[in-house]
Length: 247
Image (tube, rainbow, N blue to C red):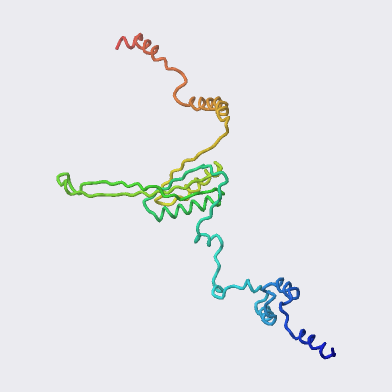
């Protein structure tokens, strides 16, 4: 075998491209580079000179929103659904029923109540639509002799239910007082509150009975008169007097 015959297969093997690209050359290095580092260095230097502090590529503002003023988070949340807390045990502590003749006012105040419950750390559920109350009246239009001319009136009351679960009694009272302070016009509220006590609540009530009785007695001393008038003796004395006999 000649020298040229040996070198020919070696040249052929070197000229053939690799079947698979090497996995350990550039892939780990490329995977660790961020999007900002992949940017063109020339454009990056120009942007630094123009805008001042460096910015990442993926944090650049949207060109359409560049001139718009961003609203605070609290204001942005008004355009979204109210946030809610999750109940751990699911024990109901308060049922708030809202009533109104106007649906927009009712829906607005329900949203306000749910947001107030969230910031007070109260798990609120609802609003649940309750059956509407329909009332109708028939009234004569004119005098009693025109009985056939009558007019009908109808009033529909809409209702919603909001339930608070796993709420502390004091926090629930604060929530109800806040809603009552900022009550919306045309909205009626009715609340059923459950306060859960310990098993020995009867003993505590018996122990407080004496102190409550003393308080009641102190209050009752200011009503009426302490001494009896003695009306019978006064009448007998008046009848036996000379002045009564002479008259």
